[in-house]
Each structure stands twice: as structure tokens, then as C-alpha cells.
Image (tube, rainbow, N blue to C red):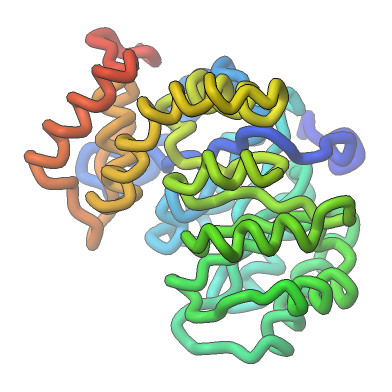
Length: 314
């Protein structure tokens, strides 16, 4: 493969990391591999610093292991070390996550993202063991721990973060999708100047997260608005222009709220379609968003200057 672990280790993750949707064929039965390359090229052209295939936005829980491997391989072929490749490898079985870790390393991943196993509640010791075993499968690949308490039932404290990083030094990043602004502030204050980089993972808290010092954002909406997402990050983080950032946030926030309220993966795919990125449906049991929500989404996208009558990947 063109990518190698040593090549991509030069990446230090920051900025906008696009959580990619997974394109499906019209009936949702198969991954639309042909749609992946032009879609990823579009996202990269928007200026993102990294791409995350097979995450929550990418409907990983609805993918087979073979499909997850296929998607990562295809995305890796497209990125060609131009941006950081960060496959999501979280799985219910530790052995599956370890297999996905080895595969990601072989494809030149700059890092991996991993949500802890969900459904059965885990002790904190079991969560640490999970990350340790993943790290053991490819010790040179950094890990982004994925804090998503509404899915896993487990909620991180700042003290637990210290325990995790000490036990598993490969954990160098944290994506927080708690939706808790106070916790985001605590995590950022606690890790400031340390070795762990915190990324915002809740769309509607992106402004607060960046203003409080997050090094970047893992953002599903960057699948359909990469340029606007990058402009927003650069305005807040790089230039520190909160006034201009608030102006941009007035366009972005209503879109983010609707995505979260309408059903995130389906709403992101609807937005992709509305801006000229036809990437197929969500896979059952997820259903398309309601027609009223789609109509409102189109209005918000139009107001933000994102609606395009011509397909951007045709």
C-alpha cells in the first residue's frame, strides 16, 4: 500500500476531523464503493485535517467486519497521506477491535478512534483493559478515546482520564460527545498543557468547545460543509476572533441542532443529498428523516449558502 505507519505518524491531530458518512447503494444493501473516492476528495478539498471512516456518522454498528475493512481500505487509497486517516475501530468484542486496529495500522492510519463496548455496562478497569488490548495490537498507533456516554452508559471523570493515559500511553486524544458543556470545560482545563488533546464531538457545543481551548472538532457535518466547518475553526481557534465566530455560528448552530434532533446519521445523509452529494440512504433500522425536517433542513442549508442544485461529485 502507498500509506505506511511511519509516514502518517508525522501527523499531530488538530483542526476539523470529518466524521464520514458511509455511502450505500439505493436499497442500502451494499456499500457504494464507487461513491467513496469522489466524496472523500470533496471533503479533503474543503480543508479538513483528517477523516474518520466507520464512526457513528458512518453507521459502523450497521456494517459487517468485511465492510468496515473495505471502507477503510478505500478511504486510505484516496487520502494518500494528504490528511490524517483515523478509522474508528470500536467494537463490542475486543478481538474485533484489535483486528480493526491491526488493519488500520497496515493502511497507514495516523491514529484510530475507539468507543468502548456498549450494551453491557463495563467497570472502569474493564474499559482500561479494552484500550490496552487494542493498543497492544499496534503499539505505535495513537488512540483517540471516544467518550459517548449516551451510547455506552459510562461517563468519564477527569481523574479517570489520568488513569487511562497512565495505563495506556497510546491514548493521546479524547473525543468528547457527552453533550455536557460543563464537563467539556473541566476536561479542557484539566488537560491544558498536558499530553492529551481533547476534541469536541457534540455538534451543538462546537463553539463552546473551541472557545474553551479544544484543539479541534470531530464533526459529522463536515461531510457536507467542510469549507464552512474549517472556516469556523480557523476563525475561533487560529485567529481568536469570537465576534466573527459568533456570526458564523448563527448560520451553523441551527443546522447542528436539527441534525441532532432529527436523527443524526440520517439527517447528515439528507444534508449531503441537499448540497449535491448523493450518498444513498441510511441502513435499516435507521429510517430517512421526516419530510418536515428535510424541508427545514433545506431552508437552513440555503440560508447558510450551502444548497447546490448541481451534484458536487457528479
